Length: 236
Image (cartoon, rainbow, N blue to C red; front, side, top):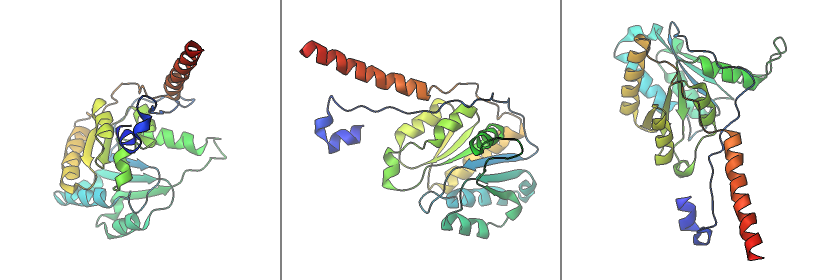
């Protein structure tokens, strides 16, 4: 909003913004249970500017410190086709047994579950969720929609964030990890912390319901329109 005002000063006193949020699904969250391996899951699309390269470099460094960790940690990838940068990073990753690409989850004809339902259940089950923000100027003003689904799960989040204080603040508000998107060392350190907590069974649900819902967003927008209607009636 601040940048929009600098670009278009005529918005002063007229412009508004809202964080949209997401509706809760029609099934209940399941309480967290620690996996036999630390499962870090990424959901959503990837691209040459939003890819797994930095995370995999950090994961390689983390495992290289103690190669027995190859049996104790897994990266699960869900979404559309891999971008070229991520695909190359996976090909060059020296511990292939750690990375599992599940691709896009489609509707299940046996259970009747939609792809989105399956995705949300997988999110809910993860030990930690990986949020990749990207690394381009637009990211400085961009909040990924995936964040709102992640917050619904109440699971720990590791965010690789590109110069976005608001998004970093949202993660810290719920006690999640935030690292600069190109910071390999910082990401390795975050993995160390996450791994230690997983070993001690301390990656619990944060038990904080996300306030960012579609209902809340609509109520805010309706508040703006009601205020405008009131102002117009007074002018008459």
